[in-house]
Length: 533
Ligand code: GLN
Image (cartoon, rainbow, N blue to C red; front, top):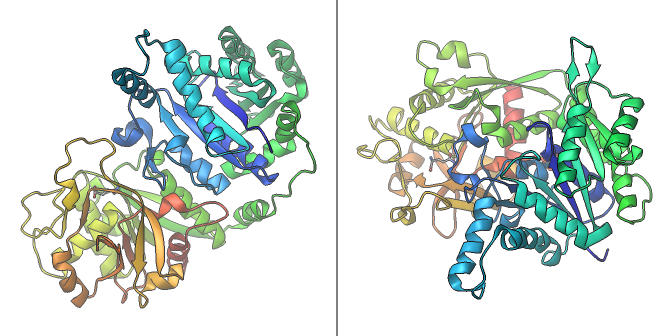
């Protein structure tokens, strides 16, 4: 296409308006027109990455194939576009400053005073343009975390101002705001949007496109008024009203010609609207699925759905492809007891034992693993969840009372899950786990081989502990098979009990690879087993 085009997505009025979904939807529409698109997110906090952040702060930590612990919005980008993101797709203020400070220590600035402008802003601009220059994308969509007016995001806004100036028609700003409905006055209010656009203007940035989030349909008059007050073309003011699923948003944007407006503003040919056929098929299957499949999610962050975002999305995609409506029963593992387990797990069709860290709620997860094993309820253990299946098996089948993961009990007499050799010397917490995609070889006589239909797979990891190979034979002899092995390190990546309907644990996180148009085979098969239960 020639020169890379840069689209900046900023937000105003309130946080959590769905900048990630709007960015993904724009990306999807441009990609459907044949462009090579990527999406990047800047997070204005000081942490180097979200890897050390508690899920209460930041929801799930998403992991890219190249082993970057990333913001969960990258999950949306991958699920919508079916692309693979990398470390270059998620950058924090911490990383920007670190890189500038490292350069300063090396003496790269030749005696100059190092300042926010131009040094921090240059580093931000370099990271935006890197995707265009190095990876040659046609479109780089850059989402700026936070809300316009935040102190933290000022250097990003200044960088956008400069880039819009430098790049001319090759840069464009989409601003997402909120239009509240005042129930008492029965009126939709545009003033917060006007203020937010003014705030942006005071930083030297003129929004080119406005996306107005609202719970109610916005009239043409209201949009006209916003356009007038905000210096934005009428056609470039679109609305984003709540829809039953986030996957409808690209179609809603297409209906309002958002992609065409962007192309026209950037001087690109417009052509025909893409059909988005498989996307529409997915949505209509989803809308038509009435029969329910109920999955119990056993975890310790159940009051916080973002903590298991990718698992929930993977399950719901898999339900759609099995023509079922997904219902999730959130089961807080801390409250799970022998007395109430029947009531909590007795009626679900399948159980996912969630990933996690630390011992809070761990005994409840062991209890769930035992309950579903003994009753042959389809069970999927992911990462820590897989480790729970292994510990429970040691305690109740192999007869090793007190067996545990060393993470939970350093002095366990039966360390069936142990710390990985290369983790023993690790002292820094950030970015030091076993991260990213690793190869796994699947045993040909296993259930997972049937599910994947291939012997060599690559899946993404994020953990410090592993299955202890000293116990492998004993497990195998007693019915729990190690059916996926890393060919280099010999680490056990998959366990399963083949005599049960569906009892599988994976040390990796398959949920990071499930997308709308390419649902993950393990989730598809798990949901199918849950339905057949
Ligand atoms: N806490 C476990 C480990 O570090 C599992 C991690 C996870 O579930 N992501 O090995």
